[in-house]
Structure formats: C-alpha cells, structure tokens
Image (cartoon, rainbow, N blue to C red; front, side, top):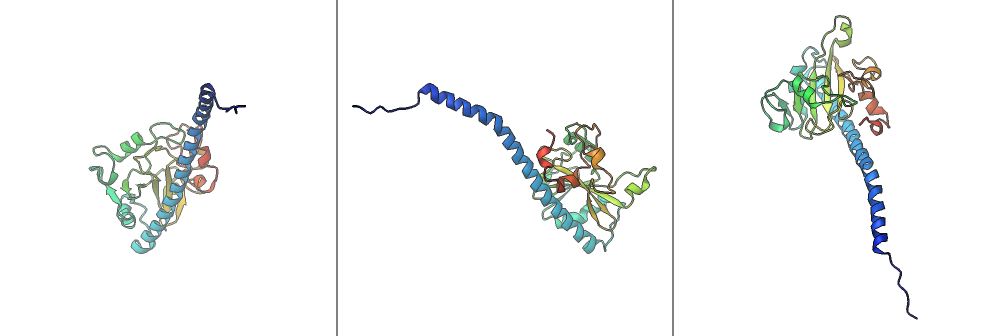
Length: 234
C-alpha cells in the first residue's frame, strides 16, 4: 500500500497567514508604542542624572555655591561647559541641531511642542536660552515671570527644561519627552510637580486640561511612578 502524505492545501495556508497578519496588525502598534515609551523613560533618567551632575559642578565649581537666579540666560555658558560638545543656540544658525533661524525662541517652542494631552500651542517655558548636547538632548533655560500676587513662588528660582530626545524628534509633548526642573539660588534641583515647585501634578499633569502649561507638572511623577510611561495619553 502506498503511504499517503498529508499536507496543507493552499487555501488553508492562505487562511493561516491571513489570521497571523490580522493578529500582527492588532498587536504590533501596541508593542511599538510600549518600546518608544520605554526609550523615553530611559532617556529621562539619563538626562536627569546628567543635569544633576552638571548643576552640582556649576554651583560648586563656577558660582561659589550660589546661583544668580535673576539671569537664566547667563547660566547657559556655565552649563554648556560640562555637556561635552554642547552648543549654545543663538537663534541665528542651525549648527549642531539648533532651531531654525529667524524666529524667537518662544515662537519656536509654541510651534514645536504640544501639551501633555496633545493640545497645540504649548506654553513656552524655557525660552530664555537653549543649548543642544551631543547626545541629542535639548536644554532650555527660563527665568519665571514675576507675579505680584505670589512673588514668593518665583523668587530665587530658575527653570530648566530638558527635551530628552531633542526638539527634532517626536513626540515633542510636555510630560512625554519634555520635562522641567527648578533650581533654587542655592543649587537645589527639584523635578517639577514636587512640593513647592511652580507647576503641580493636580493642575499641570492632566488628561483633560486644556491649559497651555499642561504637562509641565509631570516630571516628579514621571521619575517615581513605574506605570507613568505605560499610561501616556496618545
């Protein structure tokens, strides 16, 4: 007797491949998104570590233990020394990845960034000075605007904002790849959203807020909440 050889028919193979394709199409975007978010999380931790070390050196080695909190613009020259190969952006050239010339830094930030939940025209916190580092991080410097009602809130503070993968790479959203920190006159570095910082998690890290500053209060949460990057709004 001849042995019968069993095999899949062409129709069965095509059906199987079709099922595999449907499953892949359903799961692949999720996998890609999770991978990107993990990369942003790792980049934030790396950028925070670098900023902490650079701040410590600037305060102790260059400024004698006290930062002049009245001039964020002046600080850029000190900080850029300790980021190897970093470039101070003037707004007049595009070398080393600096923004397009011919527009102000505030306009550039409003055109480039979105809020935590994807609203356009995000607030331009960090528009006093910009530097780019060789590892792709963009660092922004800002002197908070004085408010007559709450002058103590901005006294003796500098805001530094880091885009952990640089302004040229997406998602370019506050609280996704854009995170602010406060530096006091004595050099204490605090992630925004921590106690006594200018932007709070309650008002500036919200899934529903339409505020232009929404996302600026997420830094502390992004650093300590293990599920933070898994739940970023799309």
